[in-house]
Image 1 (cartoon, rainbow, N blue to C red):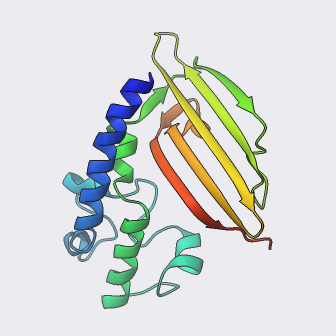
Image 2 (cartoon, rainbow, N blue to C red; image 1 turned 30 degrees about the vertical axis):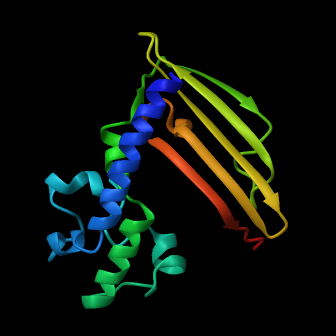
Length: 177
């Protein structure tokens, strides 16, 4: 299972690099729309428009709030950089956990803690047909900062479609508000 994940990680990272390089061009294919054409869906988040989710629009976007013209274009490029090849990692490399999947969870990390706390989480999802996926998620607090890793498949949505993930965040700001 680890070798399969490593091979998929190489593919995912190549597509991420491609997505980052194409991000300044992709919004041009969505003129008059808030989504990319179907043939470019691998580069978009399937659960949000190119304008991003509410948190992005309020707190992260270079130009907060609803925008038009070049400001909307800049926000869309930043959104695509923030979520490169999300659709590919979900649709192509994703794992489908069936209704009868068995989810085993191990670890010390309180997943809903706000702000995040130091700890780790390991999960294994197994379908009755023998297909399986895993997730390793860990956080280390450093005062007002943290480091976070997330590898495997995002098993937060078992049963359902679980996105492939290779995330390393060495410097993550912790909000205590």
